[in-house]
Image (tube, rainbow, N blue to C red):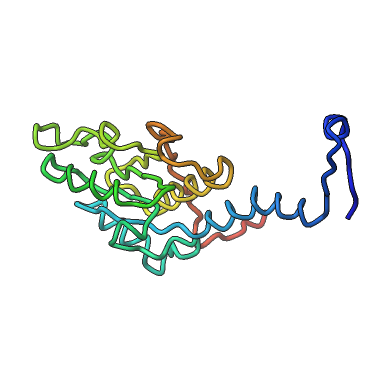
Length: 199
C-alpha cells in the first residue's frame, strides 16, 4: 500500500491511499454484482392463455430454465424482479397487473411474451389491451403465437445481457423500457440417418 498524490490533492495538502484491495473492490462493484444478479433473476409469471403453457414448458426438464438461474418462479411480487406477461390481458385485469408491477422491488424488468401481450394479437376488441407497453415499461418483446420455449430462453438471455452490460438501473431511470425485440433462434434440421455414398 502506498501513498499517492495528484496535483489537485498536492495543492490542497491532502494525500489518499491506493491499494490492490481498493481496485478489487471497485472491480467487484462494477462487474461482480451485475454478474451475480444476472444469474439470480426471480420471475413473476403472469400467464393468462396459451403463452402460459409455453412458459410452463420452459420450466420442465427438456428446456430447464434453471440453467440460467431463473427457476425460482415466485407468485408474490415482493420477491420478484422479472415480470413475464404471457398471454392476453383484459381491461379488467389491467389494474391487477399494474398493482403487481408496483409491488415488485427495484430494479425490475418486464418481458412481454407473445403477440397478445405485445399487440393484442388476434383479439382486436374493446375488452383486450392492445399491447401492455401502453401501461408498463417493457424491456424485451418475445414474438410468436405462442412463442417456442427456445425463444423464451433467448428473451431471458436478453434480460441477462441488459443486467450485465447496462448495470442495475431502476425502472424510473430506464423510462419506458428498452423495447428490445428477440429474434427466434435458427433451428437447423439434421437428418438422423446419414449414409456416406462411396463413389
